[in-house]
Length: 244
Image 1: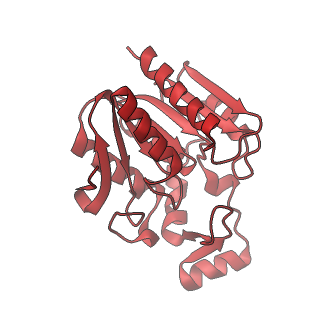
Image 2: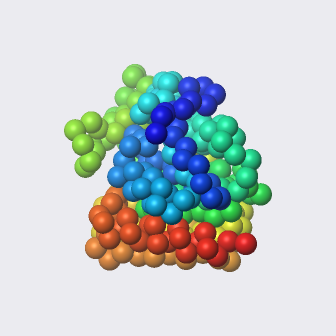
């Protein structure tokens, strides 16, 4: 499948099929070639579902400067791609930080977002998962970013001033979240990066009455084992089948 480009040089791949359009939103410093994105591509091909995956600006095959990326900017990137592909209903699938972005999109497009699936969703992680000390603040002032080690590769996570300065305006967990579509949250209880209690907190704050949380006792943050991917596609099948 050829890479296409939306406004701003945002790279995406779209597989036509029966609707609603399933949209995969990657996590931080991830892209549309990860195991979950690829597994959903295979699922969509096998089931005839419409499927869209993309790279945020400054990530993967997209143009732009990663250091200017933020929740708000990357949500806008995803909306630009969605608008380039469809004006119909979408089901958002957000992995880790992608879950935060999915919530921002659902708030921006309540009439278009028909459903949402979070995989180890990490809304507001800058508040509860990224404490900054005096040395971090000095690094931000001097070089414009701080780094944290990554358990998923040799490249450390790089958190920029643009990302951190935008985050307070994107927070969702402080009050009721005005998302009314069906929501499914998958979370591993062995997740070392995002506590599974975040899924319960998120479920409690969503306005929707149709929210289900599935906890995988031995599941890690990635939830990318064959059984985890089977759970994801089964969850999507069931959710889409239940949509009006």
